[in-house]
Amino acid sequence: MKRFVKALPLLIIVVALIAGVGYRYWETRLTAPLTIDEPVIYEVPEGAGFHRVVAELGERGIIADAWAFRLLTRLDPDVVPSLRPGEYRLTPDMTGEDMLERLRRHEMVTYNVTIPEGWTFAQMRSALDAAEKLQHVTKGLSDAAVMKRLGRPGEHPEGRFFPDTYRYRKGISDLEILRQAMTRMDEVLAEVWAARADGLPYDTPYEALIMASLVESETGAPKERPRIAGVFVRRLEKGMRLQTDPTVIYGMGADYDGNITHADLREATPYNTYVIEGMPPTPIALPGRASLEAAVDPAEGDALYFVAKGDGTHHFSRTLREHNNAVNRYIRNR
Image (cartoon, rainbow, N blue to C red; front, top):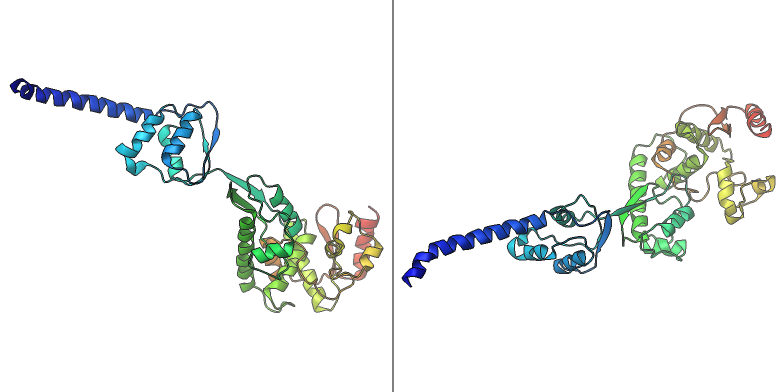
């Protein structure tokens, strides 16, 4: 017994040394680089716990020492990440600690879907249907059914969604992207309407949205948006028909084949501004902020006509004679 008591301090030292070396070795395994040669996408499954994730990472050859990560739950549980299901990009230059930090911060792989200014709602829906990794819950639904799912039953969808690039992660639904875009349009429209000029020939934000969609559909050169809005506003004030081709095209729907005939210009549709008075009943496209701002703050001037010059810009005219001359120059001669 006396010998054991004498040897006890030495035994404690030896055990401490072994424990220290073991702990240091365990730390080196956590800080070792991942055992991959190229980036990989690892998806944390729904409801998966840390031990299951560690096991799968080991089975896939992403980490070499799964035991070191399992031991983490006992030796340093505070750094064990709370897991959120989704895709995570892991790269060869990452260590095990880097991987844990990425899981802890929920830095998931994201994807983009871009909705350009001037697109229609139908084009937006087609883009969402084709977007990878989205959960396509609206595919096959009617526009009316989609608006009902968004909490806007009975509302026409055209123009209600803000054109932009939307980021999402795997599993997000297309309905959520639509909800984000709708909320964004509500916010921007309210913001620009609050800063509107006095004396506009429309009384509601929705009418401004309709005007913005006309401006967006006619404008190739961004700097011309306020001038085109000014032409439309002056025509409304004078009781003139707007006579803008994009409304004819929108009213034709699937019948539009890339050309507009004289018969098309005379066709009575709710959107044909060569036939109807004032603005169409709904927007005809998804306008961006610049067109919304132009609609509520149009440029002053005396032009009542414009015609495309073929280079993305327009020739603006004060009189019908000048306009006809411009049409001959830029359209008929071309």
